[in-house]
Length: 239
Image (cartoon, rainbow, N blue to C red; front, top):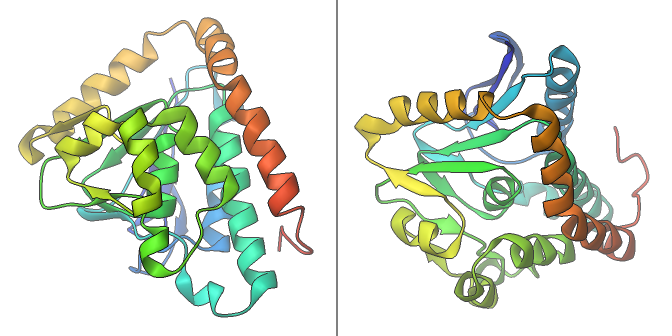
């Protein structure tokens, strides 16, 4: 059985697939275009490796993801659109991925980090002084249309309504509005993750893939339309 660990998305530590490091980044925990390419490649390899793959995205303690790299936004509209496009396509890929994806959040998760959790099949967090959510309007950004559709798909009504207000939630409240499925004590995190991986591996994979496709079908259509309308396919998106 292959277990694909993608530990440290967006620069926390490194990506691992079958315990082989395939990506290392800075300690900034920002989502960048190299991170997006590495993530897409990692899940593709996990898909090809085995029919029983489970993908785990786990950030370092204290910071799951600081979101899109704001320095790229300062480089102008073309670079900004390219980065958001790649993030949006990664979310779409996760929603359509035929194997279970588990996110493990032991810290802060700002916009792109929140998007990644909302695109996963199972989300575990740790209790602590962390903040989770979509805070774009507090930092002068309009929430991308694809992210609005993702939030509409996954968040409870109060959480979706609060996107306008850039509300960030403590882990326990993040469970209530839908960013997390559960928040556990830090001492219980490792065992909780192992238990959930074991549970996900017991699922009939054909039934899982078929059901996931049905559950996410409308959201994927809406996100695809949002990407086409708002972002198109920026030049050199794959560079």
